[in-house]
Amino acid sequence: FRRGRLDPAQQAHRVYFPLFQPDELYFEEGDILYISDTSDSNWWKGTCRGRTGLIPSNYVAEQAESIDNPMHEAAKRGNLSWLRECLDNKVGINGLDKAGNTALYWACHGGHKDVVEILLSQPNCELDQQNKLGDTALHAAAWKGYSDIAEMLLNKNARTDVVNNEKKTALDMATNAQCASLLKRKLGGVILRTHSNAEEYLDDEDSD
Image (cartoon, rainbow, N blue to C red):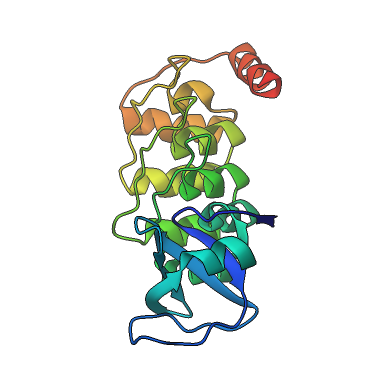
């Protein structure tokens, strides 16, 4: 955890705060707050245990410990209970981290099939969001060789024609035959790819 000002969709541990107005949010020490609106410098909008209300910003800034992008962290770790808690507390499913990644990207990158399944079940989940390298969730699944996850994305009509900053599609980045076969069938054509291209991409990633 890190101390500091909360941005939207972050979470924080908080101390006891008594209610003074009906629209203020009640919470106790150890509770987790999900901040969704910081547009008012005095009162921030947050959710705690499924309830939404107002929180004095100075309390959060002075007392709270915060973590950026809780949905992303849950997806990276394959933590289903945390992911469900984020969803229950209205954390934005398509939020981007500093690298431009979505929670879905990280779930696919980590091979967390159960997390991917939950995210894909959300009606507004963005499948084809590109990060700062131009990669989508399908790029991540193909590169990491998770053919089962790639198939899940394709069944939801993830685009196969998106190219990243290196002009590579998910098929170009596929590191095993099963992923490549799935993507070729979806594309309706055969595109050959050499092993050296895969190694080149891995080397590029390591150098970043």
